[in-house]
Amino acid sequence: MTISIQGVSVSRGIAIGRVHRIKDDQIDAPEYIIKSKQIDAEISRLNEAIKNAHGELRAIRDNIPSSTSKNIAEFINTHLLMLEDNALTEEPKTIIREKLCNAEWALKLQRDALVNVFDEMADTYLRTRKDDVDHVVNRILRVLLKQTPIIEKYPEKQLKNKLIVADDLTPADTVLMQHYGIAGFATEFGGSTSHTAILARNLRIPAVVGLHGAKKLIKNDDYAILDGDSGIILINPDETILNDYKKKQKEVKKYYVSLEKLKDSPAKSMDGIDITLMANIELPGDFERVRDVGADGVGLYRTEFLYMNRNNPPDEEEHYETYINVINALRGLPLTIRTVDLGADKEVDGMGRRSSHMRSNPALGLRAVRLCLKEPDFFRPQLRAILRASAFGPIRIMIPMLTNLDEMQQVLFMINELKSELDNESIDYDSQIKIGGMIEVPASAICADIFASKLDFLSIGTNDLIQYTMAIDRVNDEVNYLYDPLNPAVLRLIRMTINAGHKANIPVSMCGEMAGEKEHTKLLLGLGLREFSIHPATILEVKEIINKTNINDLERLTDEALMNKIKK
Ligand code: PEP
Ligand code: MG
Image (tube, rainbow, N blue to C red; front, side, top):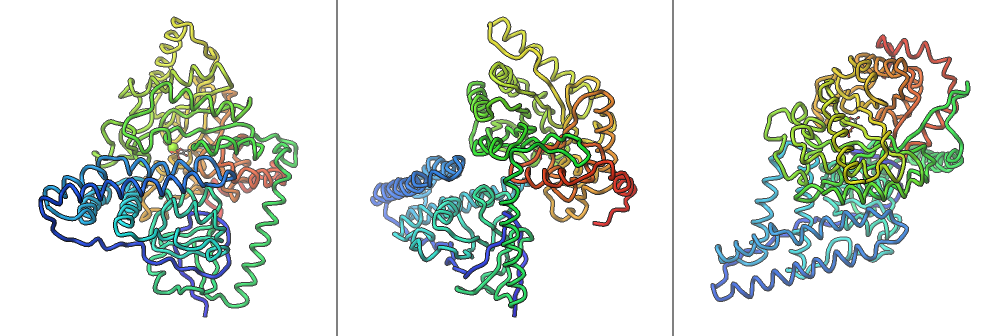
């Protein structure tokens, strides 16, 4: 009988094969009392274990195949940095001294304390960072207890083409597994924003997480199908299901190969309307992919990743160097840099400042441009760096979360001040640099005509626009049923924004996830959208639909959607 278990889809694709169960990752730390005279020896034992754990991770990072995206090493670097952090290197030593306990127990107590802090955080991204603490502590514990890490102890051949089922996997495991040629993986725990999930997407490994109770139902060597699109794992599928999936798998492969030939041709509807397809990027590994998929440029460069996993915000030089790297990778294509959008769902340590989570409604609090205007010293280095970089390539500045005109005028004023500063220092910049705003709040969509009269371009951020229109927290799965791009209120706001841009004769793009969901492509074209900004992985899928669409035929579809007549 086929058993089907539903989890959370984190990386698309279908994988079929035999299951390889990875044993429970939890390690029981032994507890014993030591004598005062043993304190130094116990601390040396801990130091040695941390050093060895560091060496193991460095070896994994240094052996990442050169074909792998460059940013993958960054994930391992995060764990290396944690191994250097006082919270893990010094605090356990204090515990050893004060409690006269062994190194393993001191490490366990410190892990519990850190995990408790993460557990209390409202932000999903940060909450899943506790997995990183667990992974790093487990690595040190294994060295102390002379155990081999889970994946490293399996010979390469044993994992090839297997479906890995585990409690949880570390980013280092994920990199090794790709190296070993696994077909896909499923875990009991983990969320869609964990580093392991992000890595799976980057490495294109089909993956499902959050399969609670899967361990009881899935045995080693079971034959299974992992459907990364719908987040399902099917154990011992019957002949019909298996054949269906094999067919689907072949079709998906053929489909992706067929899309490749669209890379060098423009996106043009059947009735001859040119559409601009830009890319959304965030990690250094994405920079090169923009050209690889034939995008027309970058419509959204999310700069928040520059602030993650660190204690202080990046300085002007770091911003500048990063932007120059992107410009070089784009070789002449336009780059839209979104100024930093921190706070709410994008809370990071690198703010080095107060957290919006100290308030009860972080999504409605001090985030994005609000935070930047409140703390100009935090904002200026980024703006100055963008201006300086604009001397070397076509850059546009994009302001997130504009809510009223006053905010926009304050940003424009600040940019003008910085331009004068650069003039005085004889530093080059593009004096005609285009400045645009994101429309992600109903207030700004309703007043899009006012924004359009003052800005050079608009970009619709549907991820937030839907959140604020429907009055739901975009990271709260209990109200996810209301997260509906097709709600006519959302569609009407989108149409108002597009019309306002067209009237003012400025470009309007859409850079929220909706722009990359191919089931919405026709509707967006019908609403008048002519510029899409989407993740490089989906650009060709959307291009294919555009090329097969007659935009003049879409009036009925659009009218019905605006009247809530479209069935989901
Ligand atoms: C959006 O809100 O649609 C958007 C593109 O911005 P982010 O997802 O980064 O908030
Ligand atoms: Mg947004």
